[in-house]
Length: 114
Image 1 (cartoon, one colour):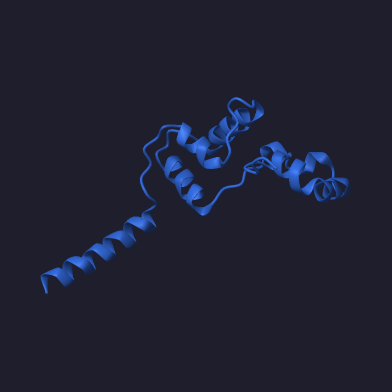
Image 2 (spheres, one colour):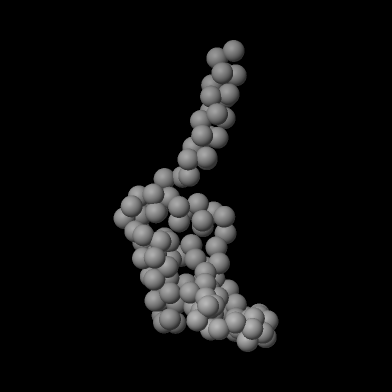
């Protein structure tokens, strides 16, 4: 079937008829083109958020990079995370994970000391 990391693959492999039905009800100009859709896991979203927090890229930059990479079979990625890793940015974990890690380590240190 190929990957479904973007809407074009999803359209072609899974939902062509359904999407065509939706598009037939609305103007094509009011619909997001499948090649502009990307699917990602919550971990990918966390990584994307961390990269955006670094302020080295805007979300539109990252989506344009992914869209352009996916146009060419030689640069196409299997999933969205591969586009993010290609940016070669050392991203920090999301703040909520750092907070949880600190809480757990604090409890462990407290248990060791007692």
